[in-house]
Length: 285
Length: 260
Image: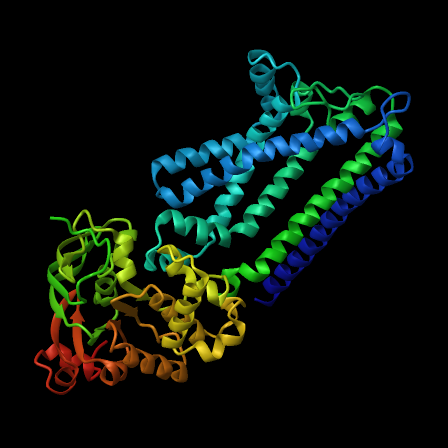
């Protein structure tokens, strides 16, 4: 009896050591990457590099504008479609029906497709079939399709976490289904929904494979319309990296890293701030 | 003949005839017949799982929201057969309000909670809305406690206050009938007493049907008491008679605590 207890205990302590080592390794990797990007990048970030004209010296201004456009296009398209798909899935269908299962598997598959495949799809549809050529619009729409499952999944989760008692409470007061959804369910899930949108922006920021095939990687011209070819920050890193500008690549990586960090902080803050007034489950259930 | 409740019910008499309710294949209510008078408080008592809450939720068709729920028989409220096809369920629920066991205020301000139903039915005028909200809060005897913080979150209230807020919210729809599903079972004795007082005061204006597990509560507030047992209504009479000379032996066993 005693010996077996002892053995279990040593077993646990070795597990603890192993876990600790794993944590340290992953921390080192993370800190290493961040430190590498900062050390190499920070000195090359100048005002001209960020907002100057791309002539003799490289600038990421076109990429900043391009990225902004891509975020705008993909969110404007994907957010309403994603949110209302999730509303349909949670509020209008039976969770256990075959129909639901098929849709859920489809969404999961959609989320698992490699981004280069989305890129190829966007290329064939928008660039070739629609004859738009390389364009921010085509890239943005392809990104919208790519972030759709992310938005649907997390919005669905936040809608499902709204307690049924609240829906019942609304129906009991004579509210219709539509009113219940818009006045009770969506507001209660708003922090989760907004967080999911912000995280989707993070996906857009960091995507490159899709864009190589759809927006054309024109690094030296500020896009004029949605139909212009353009570039994004992530694409600029690829461009600078492969065409002999290692310092600029590092600087762009630094800017991108900061932006992703800010986006994640924003998601965290929004989640926390909105929940303060509205997290029903923590206060009541 | 049209039976849409597009305006108001004529009266608040509830008449139930041979009503059966099924959840999937299990029968939750068996041939219930009952006639509930206007401006009376009717208590529904019986052991857990006997169908009293299910019955209560049939009266404003809350059971429609449950999958696989079927029913037959008639429920006639104010001369309208509420299960008729062209009845507007939302108007029915406005006329027949319900308060649940667990307080379920919306996570918005106290004011907005109470204003929810009037807004649903198109009240936009600010002063009219204010009047409804304040009146309802007063009727639910919570106004004095919240008048200084009408715009703070409803979740900042205590459990008993939340339940009275839910009653105020239901009253703001100006219902003719108020259904209450064990409204005090989650509350302390002081809050319970306040709510009982409030129920007695509301009786003048509306008909109340209340499910309760607390037999003292039934004797304190109810005019009539209905005893349910395994989905059947086994006895329905004045509260006094039920608790002094019950005619059914099962009722006697239940109220004397032999089972339940």
